[in-house]
Image (cartoon, rainbow, N blue to C red; front, side, top):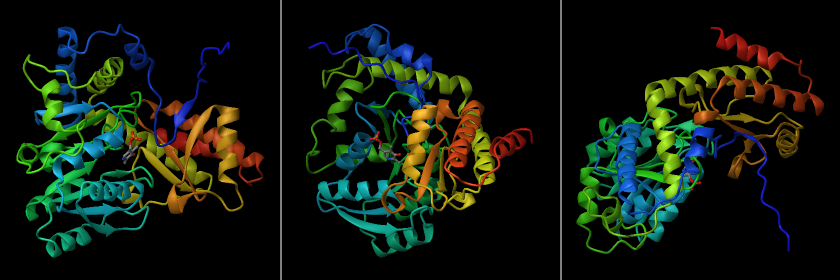
Length: 393
Ligand SMILES: *Cc1c(COP(=O)(O)O)cnc(C)c1O
């Protein structure tokens, strides 16, 4: 056997995640691996928690990265808060609401579904009606930024409805964190989870979570054990908790945590508000260019996520062939549609480090060239021109 080292191609990642990772973050990963109870490492963990509190705008003591991708953060929220027999109102307007339902069922809970069309924001009126119809519900769960469609829901309003009804709020902020405003304390979010590889532009495999005082009380007061040993926050706290006394729970992904630390330092340097504004600015330029090519957004303007742009594929175009050409000829990755939107849309991500002018112009130019090559009657250069006009406004 003489298998060679793996050579990863240099791509530009403009899909639904992972997003481009800055060399600062990649270099942070190459620092020496140290023990997971080394005092130097414990110090790093403390500042990591503080950086996450800033990114999520919370003072919650129970704020930390779960060792696993966004899906483990989702699972951590449900297994810790939901006990057998608990009713959970779940909003479904894309792929990830369906996964929440599956989590609740596996916890022995009863999901009450509030459905909206894919591409639409969650309808607060339906949520209010569901909360009234189920006064015994324990929690309301929804996706802030639906990455499968590019729709953003009004998390502040939905959390206020949950508070008024006296139920816990569980929020999926995997794609919103760092890209659009997320204010955990101000909005009264009880449990929130995110991911490292979307607008934080870190390597995949970590899931920041945060639990309010109220949620922590619910976790401590459970009448049954958390069904997952690994995700039981009562045990995880023994390792991540405050103070110097730390017990072995699992071996933390040391070098990946260096990477998350660095990506959050970068976010802090830029400033949260500036990061949100940057995502919005580049989205406007990308939108102008895509529309100049005749591509239509599937999400109504008011609910559009700047970091995830879903546009319809022109008639007669094989969407997979276009993505293949972009990857092979331009080293550019964009995303396909999922579920009912498969084959019908492209999902173009502008997440974190990838949300910049160079990427916007490169993506527009590449996509336009491929579409012209495949026979679409477009005038070359129009997309970039429209984006540049938007930038100069
Ligand atoms: C990506 C994503 C997830 C899952 O994250 P993984 O890191 O892939 O496990 C969950 N929710 C939303 C909204 C996402 O975009």
